[in-house]
Image (tube, each protein chain N blue to C red):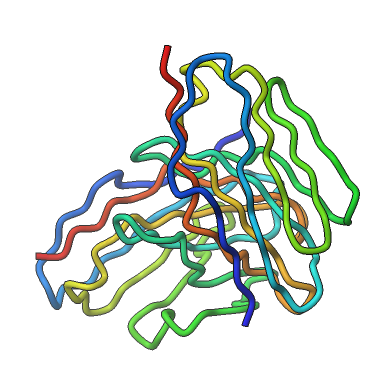
Length: 113
Length: 110
């Protein structure tokens, strides 16, 4: 069964450092998403991406965040200057249509120290 | 504001003891309601999509139903391997994002 692949599975970074979280969505999917889940809290929407541009973003997705699809297969989330409160599980997801259930990756656990 | 509330927060069942999980929602025009299963440290795993009131979907021991205000996930004769957190999410007509509830943590005791 096709999978969404995320790397790394765990990243520890110093506060103020830049991090890039990587995702390989399912190959024939057109819609890509980033969500995050702070420990013990809800899964929260960050951003959706379609046709090489951001289609929707939440209040969480401020100027410190950016997304890219650099080569037609990878989909990345960059956090420019990490804060302690950015510590969370970050999930990438993709779907074939905008109203279909997403396929989520296994997540990257980001720990900011 | 679009909201999703799940109950109960936690549920312990004996193996074989059927029960239901609830997801109440308020959304400005429902585009779809989604059920996911999440195991510890893993990403949510897609179970069902429901698009309109009266719709039902089934998969093994799970059955999801939808009304205009809520959805139920019925678990028939659960097994220990059904232990997980079950998440409900809604998608509004006005956007692509999913609004997730906090989930129901299900434990099935052998």
